[in-house]
Image (cartoon, rainbow, N blue to C red; front, side, top):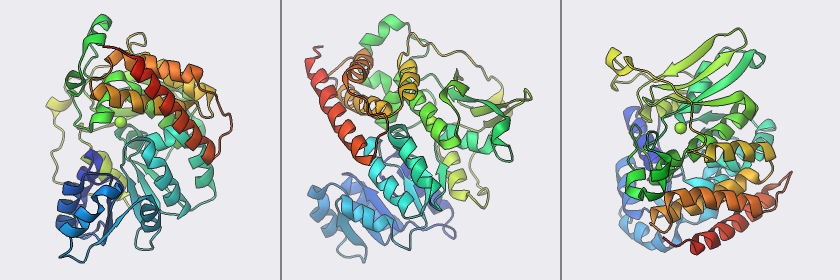
Length: 382
Ligand code: MG
């Protein structure tokens, strides 16, 4: 489990605890949340834990000295551990670009992947798909929308697909007038109406960048052109996405807005569904399901994501890098909400595009775009 202390990581451990005969966490990896990693290690008794930030290594090692759990640190330790024969499934739940390298390692090692780190496909979907072609690896989406597409596409032929309807809650500012967006705070943006998630994705959800990312993620997962993926705002988050077929029929997947559901589904594959005592949906939950068009004027990053997908190459990598820098700055109250838009637009306009990138090009492009966006952040005065 890569990213065990984040929101998806913690919920995945809930599922592992729910089916002790079926799953065992063999490896837990955290970036810097040392105390929670120690607590998880004591509770789930993995073979090994890795704290990626080396400055916490001794602290974690001392805390687990009375156990037989192996403690390691650093990125090369992650790569080694992920390829171990005891690992059959890798849950990729780290945040942002940092997920790319270890996901590539897991693909190359032929591990089954439960993919929760969408940025991996946003940044380097073309590269990941090339690697998947020559390997036995299967990639199961953990994102609720992509889990929905996956389920709707079961038993269907690719050539019968007309388009994908990607649903979006619209986030906390769906009904707020556009003019007020420049004054919202990080605390306002962190109040998501339906989903309990980590801070970074919650801000991405408020700007709707998250939906742009998911469009690109869907493109690579299901081989559908961006022009055939349409975003529909569905504020109740009960319909997790839909597929329209060429005969005019539409299939939708429904469920409560709880990430345990798509995690449980992904971990059950390929055998089938894992029965659960979780709360089940009632008529009241689905009594009022509404749909509306996204406001592209108020949420320009949706258009930016389609433009990045159209340009291809390193354009989505640059967009993602600028977003990570801008969102971090917004969370520290260093820039306004609407500055996130401006920083991403300007970084994309000014960074060079590599049309057919290899891995080194992504690394360089990510570093360059982050530096550039960080300079733009410094120029903002609020
Ligand atoms: Mg999602």
